[in-house]
Amino acid sequence: MNLIDEEYTRHPFYGVPKMTAVLKRKGHWVNPKRIRRLYHLMGLEAIYPKPRLSKPSKEHRIYPYLLRRLSINRPDQVWAADITYIRMKHGFIYLIAIMDWYSRYVLSFDFSITLDSDFCVNALQEALETGRPDIFNTDQGAQFTSHAFTQELKNADVKISMDGRGRVIDNIFVERLWRSLKYEKIYLSSYHTVSEAIEDIGRYFIYYNNERPHQTFQYRTPAEVYFEGFLDREAGLKADSSLTPAVLH
Image (cartoon, rainbow, N blue to C red; front, side, top):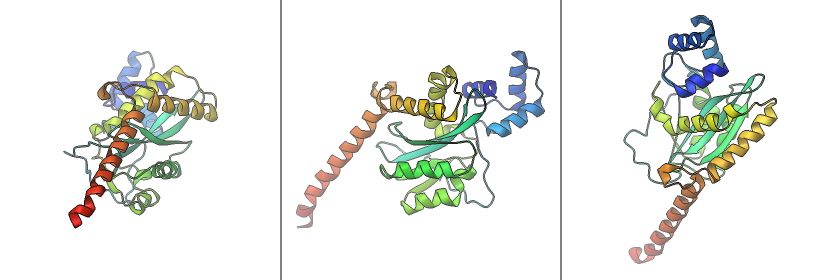
């Protein structure tokens, strides 16, 4: 499973046949049936070109994708969430992160040993304590289409957007976050306990937000971009409000 995770992180377009062939070339004599079973356990979809840690529930509503041709030019315009597999010395856990698309700032994250929706809802509630996005984008997984998750967004008056099935580019910035996390932290570590993994990954996100420079932002950090953009918007709102009395008069 750890080898599959590494190969899939590098090549998210690998389905079961290609992954089977790659592992055989590395000396692991596995068959497609076993790889398919492990894909299912890890939440990887063999047909579509991106990790899908849950399948849509037929009882849940699927929302349209709202980001196509949308110009994202400020913080809290679009947030996105995704779930990934985190390997440990013995076993694994799941991680959800919620990110501001404009700045790549990680607003919240949470962990679980199962793929129920509770830890996703917890992360969403924590993120909503910091602000409100106009749009919230996810894949079509059962956790994100669940009533508990979507109702939190509706209560906050947030528009819900969901990726087209199998479109890795629809949530590309969170996918890049997973690659950074795994290559810069997970694959260099060996977690013996869940608490050890939670503490270390928590430290990584503090580093990612506040210290790790991004070339896209002229080597500023996500925190700098997020909060500078937020302050600029607040200043603009104050300037607009200062003109309102004259306009009304």
